Image 1 (cartoon, rainbow, N blue to C red):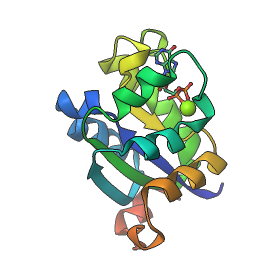
Image 2 (cartoon, protein in one colour):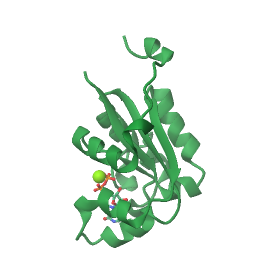
Image 3 (cartoon, rainbow, N blue to C red):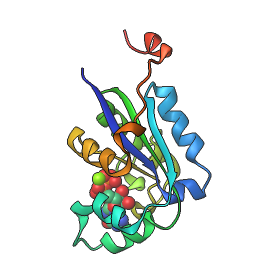
Image 4 (cartoon, helix red, strand yellow):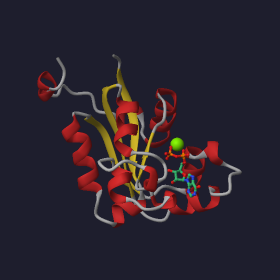
Length: 151
Ligand code: IDP
Ligand code: MG
């Protein structure tokens, strides 16, 4: 199984509700490796670039104002099959349909306030990482705990 990188972001509702630590700790405890992290307010143009696939949909304008409404915690996480593993941990787009034990299932109530973004494919991950991080902001290092996470 290939080692992948994925783009994750605690959205403004997660930051305002004080859930950054809880959300990040789930990924850390799972075994994902932190490669980059940034606390930022997303400029409108960057949000439009990131969510370009949704332009023209009914929720697009409210999505852009939601995601730019306050700071987000942006990060790149790495691990085996990281894109799908992290999507599974997030839960479905609608928190009411997300299983308990997932981030959206445990903390959210509506789709428009669903706490977290995660890339949906390795191709999306590469695109999204390049929107939010410069190559030199991705930090390569050996994590000794990997010897006890992967066989
Ligand atoms: P995803 O975040 O699970 O990948 P997408 O379909 O890519 O879901 O939608 C991107 C984001 O747009 C969602 O996470 C959510 O914040 C918002 N969104 C999607 N559909 C709706 C909707 O029907 N109403 C309000 N917001 C929506
Ligand atoms: Mg998506």
